[in-house]
Image (tube, rainbow, N blue to C red; front, side, top):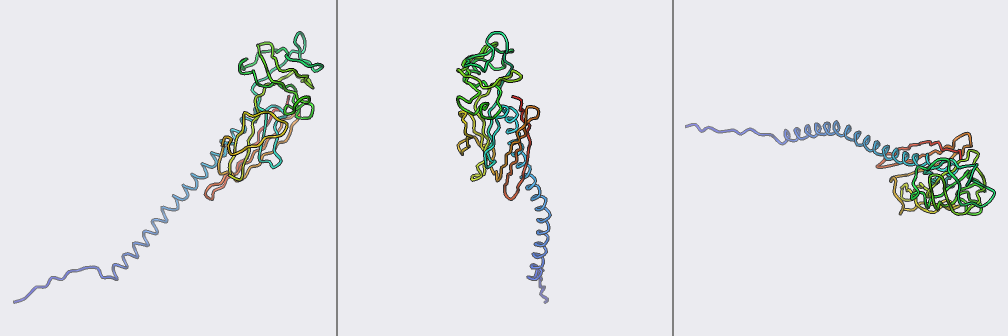
Length: 263
């Protein structure tokens, strides 16, 4: 009588090791093929986000600089801060008739040739400035008796009233401007941030930002602001450059803004 024996087939240890090695090699190739495009996409996305942040920050700064009072832009010694007086309205004053503008005596009002866009309620507490040259004797940052600005007390369509002042100079174009509080942009490189400070008093000395001011951008590793003063026939030029870094990515953007220089 014959006995049948069933033989079971299987993998040997050597075959199993070979399969595992081949599978590992294939997996590494697949991972490398997938990882490179994914890493490149992540880097591109991060760079795009940094560019967006820098562009938005520079656009915000440029928008305010365009409305700066002529000859009021000033840069800190370390070129990390930029300050200006913000113009919100303006026009021409009367140089003949009644309530004319004068520099020969103290005055409290002058006649307007056309109504302002802002209302009387908005105007009270703001400052009227005439012929700001940004130099001693005609500098809106200075205090009495050198100042050429005065706080507005009342406004009608034809007359502006202000605290008593003897303006030092008249404008060749009979122009006046209305400004509110200063605006200051500043970088604190110690915490890699750019801040905006506003709604503070006008002073002869330039202000400074702190970490309690409005945060405009983070991851700022360098800032450089400069100002080339213009003349009555040529606008001034502000140059803004900021560097933003994040996870090894670094981008630097620069923007140049023309500043009206005809007071």
